[in-house]
Length: 371
Image (cartoon, rainbow, N blue to C red; front, side, top):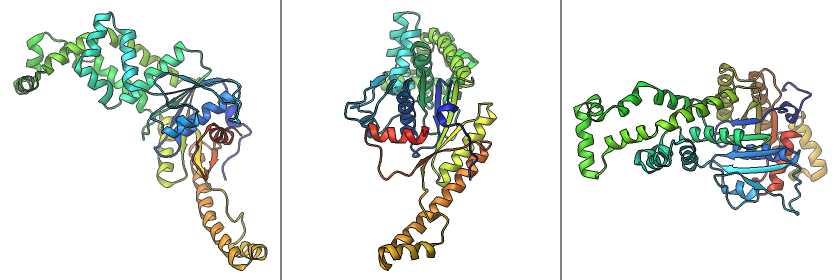
């Protein structure tokens, strides 16, 4: 069985101001993030939950028609059965809006701001470039931490094998913006074309004649106008990088007992340890626990046949035997993952018969997390 601790999740997270939920897709990570936020708010804290493309039912569970790109306070209705002692705020990460806000805040002038926002290269980079979700998550985390008074920020990261993608992506971008590659675009007129080579310049020229868009010129203008934003964004990125490696932050690995998500969780735990992060918390969703309770199927069959009759008792005993296989598999998986995290006790959420549909259902998940 898993190693036990006399500290529940609330005690383990005491003093943490940023909770980063990582894990594979399809394991209930976004719902877990929302339940964490609700559980902390029910215990008197002011919490912001930043979700990544949540299902509509999650917004409905929070009592909202939709989640916007700015924090919106979640109110527990009088008949919801949920009492929020603190405050719960929720938002969905809006990549384009986040980047636009960064430009508006950091641009050296209104003219520079307008040039960047109107540039077609920027419009593509701010929505389609690989890592754009990670970049905007870092930017929004900085804003919420530095400019608001939340006690805790819960960040639901994009599904990824690399728990640090959302942190490394901005650093890679800063490396590019600070490096020699940027000078290609900042170089005067013809020098840029010569550095690209005649063949590339010819392609750009044909592209301009066909589409009417001077892509080479747009690239040069974009990077020149971006100059005033680079330094500010670099400072924000480095500040968030330090914050995530500080004692104020905690990583929570969310998984399920199935083989592939469990392997992902083990991998993430190793990567976080290699990166020098504090030991992550482990949350295992959809865990089966009902089974034969250590008895043989024959013993259970005999007991149930006495109570329910031979036919019904046999069917129930067979069903319990099937669940017993899953329960033993889940227990073994949890034990192995807990060992990977140094024997740290896992937080277990049982397999629920229904999806979370309302605030009361989300509070039920929160009680498993903190109970």
